[in-house]
Image 1 (tube, rainbow, N blue to C red):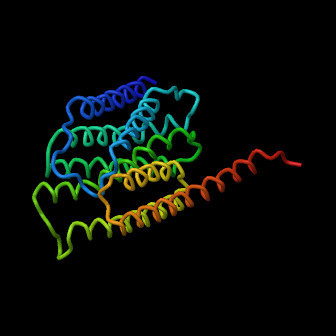
Image 2 (tube, one colour):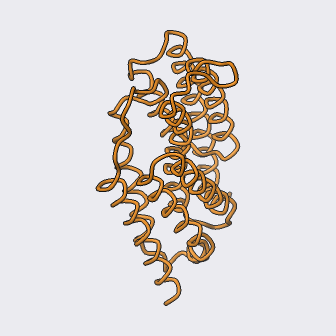
Image 3 (cartoon, one colour):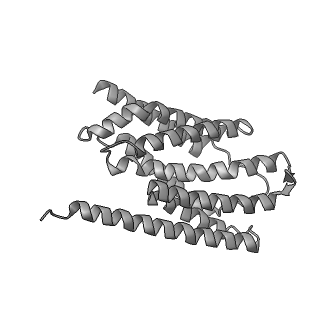
Length: 242
């Protein structure tokens, strides 16, 4: 029990480091706004990310043996994720890309460990679904920020605007695939919020706005289908045996 308490305290400290890094030490990037960055009101999702992670760090787990086992399994990865994300928020490019990528890979490992662990409580995955979704968006945006900072107007013969269109299409396909494979409608909700902010950022071309709308509809349909499927499964599990 002392080892579990120590790990949870370490998780909380690393989370507080990220909170300080993002709230007090983070300097918002300057320069021309990017087309792939959503409108500023979407930053409200950070409150959801930090709140769910804080609850995950401090909630009681004594009554959940599977959750205790998971904490032992993923705590090292959690600390690495937090340290990479926090440090990546402080340093500038190109190290920001390196640290953020390390943090993202570690977060993916956490998600997969939680996803495939039997008898876990539902709360074990939800915070990481939210965090993984928003981190995926940051990973999508970061290369465009670096290209802007280093004044690259094109890459491999394609203009930045063309890359934005391509990445929006590929990103939407990846989101829908992820939602269905992992039956994770929480992940999809965060992505819907991103596409809403993207539509209202005022920097997309007409075609890109059409892509954003189509992507939003596709992700919303995937979320509804997965949610209804899970709802039916829960109803069948609670149905009394005749």
